[in-house]
Image 1 (cartoon, rainbow, N blue to C red):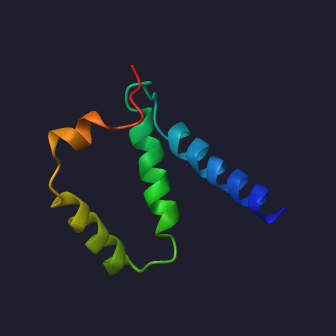
Image 2 (cartoon, rainbow, N blue to C red; image 1 turned 60 degrees about the vertical axis):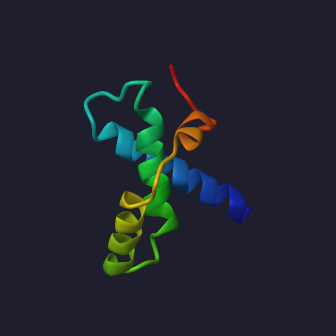
Length: 75
């Protein structure tokens, strides 16, 4: 029961986030979902912890192999 409520709450956040924009193309939908996932996963962290997590992601090295192996690619 708790798991279902958590999933419903998460998808409610996704829908609310997408509704705040005039339109969301299929091409960028995964990016919006990724943003909601980040905020949901760090909801108990303080502002400085979230900021540090974002900075860490900014300075990660991306290789061509990582880009090719992305499991989700929307056309």
